[in-house]
Length: 296
Image (cartoon, rainbow, N blue to C red; front, side, top):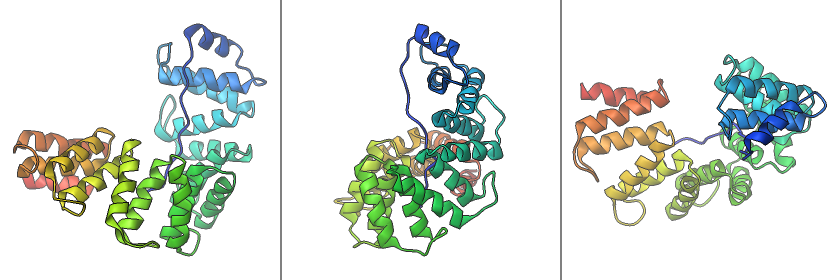
């Protein structure tokens, strides 16, 4: 079980093709909003052919126009290598610029860069200060990341009770990552009373928002009979859902279920497919590598 931090994404938009073209034509260094909206449409392939290179070009103009969302989107593109060469230093540069433009999301993302030493020199205290800045501005993801810093002692003294108090409102406001982490705290009894049923409720909230780790952890609770009667079928359904949203551990657990015939009919071919999918999601995930090696 892990406590996760969250690289914050941005929302989506729905725009007609004519409007996209109009927005793109008005994208200038004095109209950053149009750049961000048009760039998003090209990134999503919404009413226009998907074109990441075009999207990042528009984001670049928007960011130059001091449009913080454009800077964040450009940072995310560099982080993932979408439309531009993958470059952690460039990603952190644009996250920093967004934060300097008073974007809480930008501050939370540059905080993660410092926490992980990704594109910048690792500096946990600086990371925590950025998370706090984002949280103080009312950003749910920033509060969730600050809470994780308190759990792990990243730039602050460990304080799991404080972490829980930060996760709770963030989860209530729809932050799936915060819900998942609250589930971990309640399952482990870290900073809160150990209560498996409450952990299951938080995992369910996370899973309902396509947080794969929430689905996976809830599946394990059902698989081991920690909530109600042991239910391998329900566990398999949760592992399958977690795997469908790219949670490597869920894919491995689903593969193992097929190997054992636990909740499904034994099927070594299916088992191998799901374990290999876990490796495709995370090539360095050792449980998947070990599971595959045991099948040979």
